[in-house]
Image 1 (cartoon, rainbow, N blue to C red):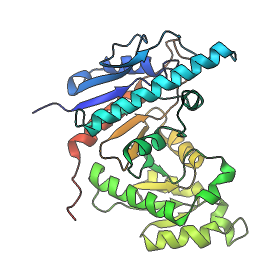
Image 2: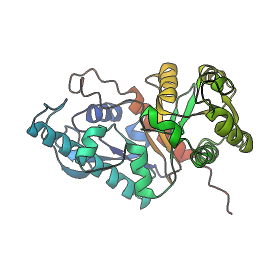
Image 3: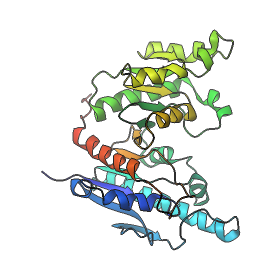
Image 4: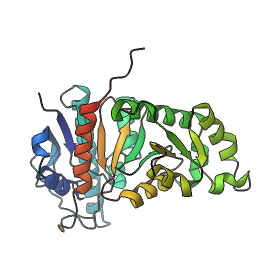
Length: 310
C-alpha cells in the first residue's frame, strides 16, 4: 500500500515552528507513516524539501526598529509563501494533506498578506467555504466567527454565517470523521441565553431559529454546553466567537488539541498554539500538539468518506 504524502509548513521562522517540526519528525512512528514534504525557507535548521526562500534572521521577537520591522515582514512573507506552496501541492494531488506550523499574524500582514489568519487564507487560496474546528480526544469546537474584535461579533454573526458553519461542520464530520449523523450543539452568544432579552436578543431572534431549522441543539449557555459535549452528549459544539470556543478546548485539552480546517478538498491540521516567540530557541517548546496534528492528518486521509454523488 502506497504511503500517503503530506506537506508540513514551518510557519514563522522566528517562532517555535521549525523546532517543533524537527522534534515531531524525530518522534517514533511519524516519519515512517508517510512521505513528508517539509515546506519553508532555508536557514531554519530544518532540511526543507520545497524551499520558498532564505532566512538568516534568527529566532524570537524583533526589536521595534526599522530593521526589526523588515525582519518581521520577511518572516511573514516566507510563512505565507510556504502556505501557498503547500496548498498548490495539495490541489495538484502531489500530497494528500497539509500540516501547518504557527504564523504570527502581525508579521504575516507586514509580509503583504491581508487574511486575518490561516483559515481565511486557505479559503482565499482554494475558494472553498471553510470553518475552523479545534479537536481533541475530549472535545470538538467549531468557531462561527474567527479573528474579530469582540465588538464586531454580533454584526458578523448572521443567519448566512451560522447556516454555512453548521452545514460545513456536519459535512466535515461525516466525510472526515465518519460520523453518519453528527450531534451538534450551538453555544449561546449572551449570558444565560440572553435571559429572555435582558442581556441581548440575538439568541432568541437569530440563534434559536437557525438551530431549530437545521436540527442543532441550542442555543445552550456556554457555561454548560462544553461540559455536556465532554460527557459525550454532542459530537461538536459551534461557538459564536473565538475566545469562548478556544478557551473551552484549551482548558479541556491543552497540548492535545489540533486545529482543523473543515470544508477544504484536503485535510489541513495545525497545532492548537501560536508561535511562542518568547521561548523560541530556548529548547522549552513541546512538540506534542504538532505530533497530534500530523497523526490526525494521516488519520483523516485514511478514513475519508467520499461525498455522495448528487
